[in-house]
Length: 342
Image (cartoon, rainbow, N blue to C red; front, top):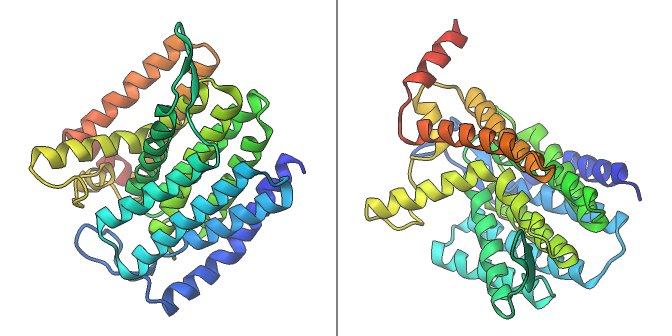
């Protein structure tokens, strides 16, 4: 089937099934209660990720010829959704969750997803051997937790992953990677269909069920492309298009270690929290972070097209703005908010 149909099927299914996930959320008491570091003001169901998962796989089943790699991606993603669902309903210890993330990532390696060979500029093709499987596990776990940490404001994670999926589609289609291209469009359609209900003010949250699934699929798709091309492009793109949450995750780890806390300890120091503390509304904060993510994606596109100087300049500007936020220099942001509230 055509790319358009893959996107439409995922979009329609996600739009139709998200309300069903809201009903299940109430029935299973999977509800996010306001308070603490949470910024929402009323109880909201938090297993909307089930709709994203279902829509993605329905689109894939109807548009793709099944193979062993898709089997591995399906089994592993089902495991990660199960873990997220349990955590959203019952809560799960961080270490237990990490062990299940490792197991789900290992499923991909078992089905042949690995970094056995990578072609790097100036260095040529590098044979990673058994280390490729280990790196693949770390890669997937890293992307799972990167998306998970970005899910802090209404519509933030879904919007970022929608943009990431569209850019990954551009990358895969550009090098004639048809299956990964269809997978990215299925992911984009699923995320957008869910976003209709999740943008501020959110009627439903994706929860760990959705955020870990999105990160897992992005990680799996990038490895799938790497299997076919052995180029570093399949790895660079996810890193750049998810540059904003990756930076947030890096700062969170440094911040928590500096204060002597566990890296799994939740806090109120993320990018979105700092934007809110600077006086931005939820909608304004999300749009600012969308813009920053779009800039990271544009850096990836410019780099792929060989415009390295423009890519470097844009990347420096994006990181500079991130540092302004992370170092709590919020006067500029406060002035910006006041100007636009008049």
